[in-house]
Image (cartoon, rainbow over all chains, first blue to last red; front, top):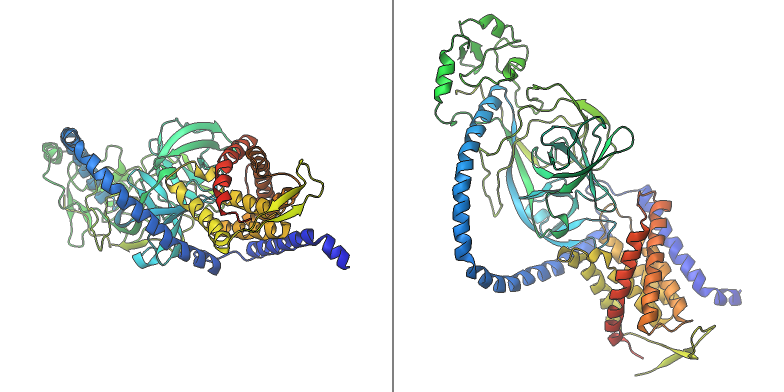
Length: 444
Length: 180
């Protein structure tokens, strides 16, 4: 026996170590950690390592800034000229965008279209990765001490990055959108086709569950659909790189993310999303065309009662308005060209569809027929079932009327608005959402 | 410095004896730790670094230098589990552990039989063991855990080549910590 053990000692030790690890694997597979739960050994390891990483990253930045600040100063005059020219160009664009935004807000206010704003964000630094090709998780230097919670969206100015999956006191783990376990509700910007953006083991991102009979053009932008209840609607995701027929009647759409996921250094964690109706009070003066439209005999006049409900006036067309099926326009000049208000009389008095009261189930008026197949995006990469829904017709526009406020070192930035989505599943802990009850119909 | 020599059993080299190196406790603790730290930190700055597997190289280095299969197994197991700890919530502990345990055992067993001191043999060892490492990892992920990993020969070959080239320099650097 001793001879046997002595002779095969090495193999026995190898077999014992392997057996122990396989048993450990089996236990983990049988009893996986719950959502947001961290195994103690991981917590210890990450808590021990993150201060070192933070120290290295911050000291490296400090040294780097010493050199780069001087280099920046040398080219600052030329850059200043370029920036001024760019500002002039952007002012012209801004004027046009402002006008579009006002019009969009008037339409949104008419149909009680709720918007979501990225109210506050926390800037964080990427301090580490998983270190392997099979897992693409990132570590950021902000944790529960800074108000970070699981399932919060992580973005950059150029596009979305991922979501927080584990939170430690002074660090968090982020699951990027190109990880194989990631899933994000996404939509094509122009065609409004919706699907789920999923990662792959090789780091590629594909938009899945778009029917193969749809036409998708390479180069088309992909934005968040808001269906996962993690990312606000309309944030840039990436661009379509290639479209191939996939299996099971779906297209295989490869997407190049807008954010450079392999070179991330600073990110923003969305800590608060505010949801409210657009404020239509300060939309600026009426245009001449609005006044003209008011005087046209074909446009019925609408009164607003004390309760805030829009009443069709005693003008031709009242009967139709009170029937609730074709309410008149509330405000001159705000007639949606395709009959948007007519199909959704959100604020009509005798309408069959009363105004929504503080819920997130308001759907934007659908001016197009449903032509998309939308799986319920889970945001967690779970199995999803395709489900046809109506795409929103009133898409978000450019400017945010209510930019977020800074608080306690938070960084706020405006974000595109979102129509209230109707997802199949919601994350266990979504970012904090404050819902403002809808006001009466806006005085335009 | 003390030298310990071990007779070859079925040696494939012309040498009759091979040195068994030892390391200080500091080196044994901190070299793997720093390798794992670099592995999780550097890809933030250098985008191609996930291809380079420093903990894998350290495992081979310790295993071939100490030439003891049992210590090779244990070193590989510890380094692999350390790598697993940082690989994310969806990555079960033990996947890298199993792969590096086997690599540690094979490398130390091979170190008993051939000369692993010159750059040529180090290049070959690193190249071949990297392919085996990837194969074991894929086998564990696909066979035991049913994860949908995709095996790519070209990617594995390129990664193995990169690791083998970098490994020559890493081993040369780590040679400084050897104690005869």
